[in-house]
Length: 184
Image (tube, rainbow, N blue to C red; front, side, top):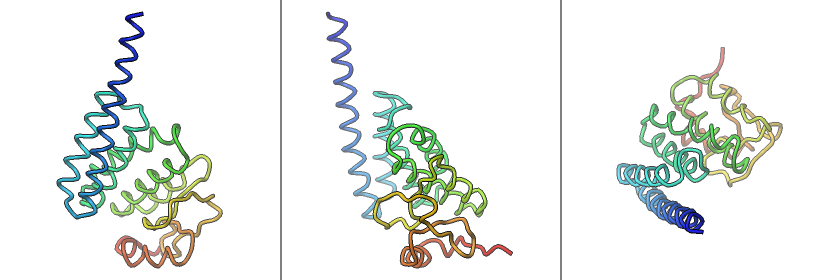
């Protein structure tokens, strides 16, 4: 009986640690929206440490923090760090959790390769979801998944995919124009 109580107590402690880490992640997102990327990074790293020590690497909650940290590193221009975090998020999310979450991490990793100038790898990564489920390349597109056949590729580089012309135009102005290279 005491073994059962200890196990329950351990699960309860892990749950509380994950809950606290989620609160820290939310604070980090707020810092990021305010432009305090260094503060956001510190908070995300604290949350990641809590999750790793309480539930380990192979947990959806840990993958969520890795994705958020990867997105932040993209904003900060820390491309190697973004790639490392997003690869780990994709690795777990592809086989666990929702198709939307996996597609978001895949798109984020595609953006890493786009920034690195490797548009072929960006395209390969974006098309890697086994169920052909993707998200629009416009970060501000409402959160939904699309079947690959519902999206159109950028006519210049063919490596970024959009749900429509409005999202393509917005992403072009905000982000993609810097990285798009028309194929010869």
